[in-house]
Length: 366
Ligand code: KG4
Ligand code: ZN
Image 1 (cartoon, rainbow, N blue to C red):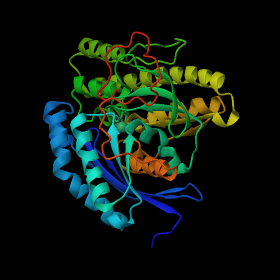
Image 2: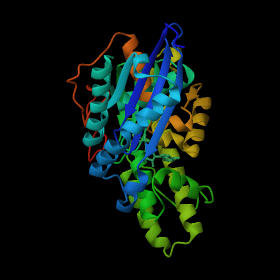
Image 3: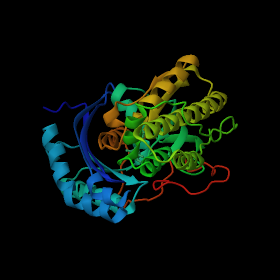
Image 4: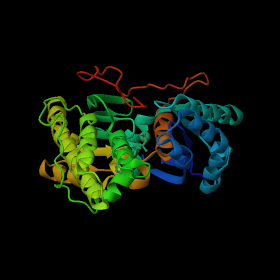
């Protein structure tokens, strides 16, 4: 059933509020990937009463269901532990309790079944997902927008990343989540804001475009969220139509800001790496699921002769297929981690990147 030129990897993801396991196969001759199973269980119901992710609840919830999720992933893929070439788990960045749960389970599997362990960086997993889904290889420009991160990176190769821009305050997903919360919408906030925005007028409410026109491709979203709060107060009492208009106007401001920052990043990337094959833009992370943002980025790429790439929606938000994929890539080039490898709450992709100007509070996964 297994072909000798295939690498089979079990991936485990527990860095935030999704407990996930997946089995992925990589063909070592062609470099092509295939997802055999991809099981994701969201913990949103447990966190909902608190209006956000509670780290202690997240860690306990991972402990309670991870074994079952791994069993489902193995069964769904039709493989046994003896079929695995490696086991990979997210080791950071993220909430430390959850990371320890996933990484410890992976270590136990590695030890019990004698398979190599790969401790995977969650950001790298988002960054390289397009290799799994469409065979896209670096170099490319990456816009990584999730609940904990807003970054633009030059992906030069597996393990080689150059950060061009980052957020000086809130991450983009965080801005969506906080906007949803202040407008009384459900959680997670991004999909709730997107859904409401469909019925709204994106020009109805005047909102700022923070950082617009600045030379460095950094982001800032805290002021935008505050402006939504002020406009919501000015428009009170809020009808459903006013909330829809606020959401649509917020999304439009986000799309304008991100597009402006991405253009700056493209200009910078072109100066750093002028090869034609690098004219590719990849968007990844949970916010990459946002349709308005995707279509704005696609337009921008068409206008600047870049190809545009985004993982399918199910692989934009947190999942373990992307973790297994990085495990397979690293395993196939001879990497392995020791059983003493630690979980890391902080783990930047580009360790040499200097902090953004005026760097303030950073997201949970920063
Ligand atoms: O990558 P992800 O699943 O987890 C982290 O690594 O943070 O990203 C989750 C974030 C949340 O803030 C969520 O509200 C946001 O992605 N998100 C969206 C959409 N779907 C998820 N934001 C805007 N529009 C969406 N459709
Ligand atoms: Zn993520």
